Image (cartoon, rainbow, N blue to C red; front, side, top):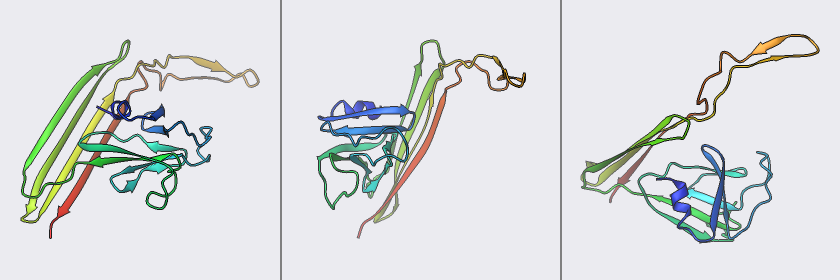
Length: 192
């Protein structure tokens, strides 16, 4: 269902997630010494989606894991092939590729609930279509709604020095921390 599930099957790999969409990966117990400051050191694990690096300063993108062929781990240090941020290793997320001459698709949906919070849901789909005798395209899309569970309670604050009182009525609501994620991916394959 997600990156949490893949990590469970990768020996010597662990990760932390500070907020939705952002994570730090560790391999072989090596950390870069980052302190959470965005201008800190580069991560010690390079992460790639197919051949594209998705590593940022001190963290990686927490990619939505759907229509994935496999996840590879390469022990570090990795040199010129994978470059920066691969001191302790490299993690490669390999997507399913378009298949020439094949027309098929798939659809997944799920519903979940959060105790004392809102309902969440996920819709995911993929489609493999031939666009010519020697070409095919693979389209992948998803939308995810994570239910909120933190209540932003109406309150006021009076500043002692000025006596000015402010309130949060405009933003107060129950289950205020819901998260929506929407994404898509398209791959084109042309044979010779």
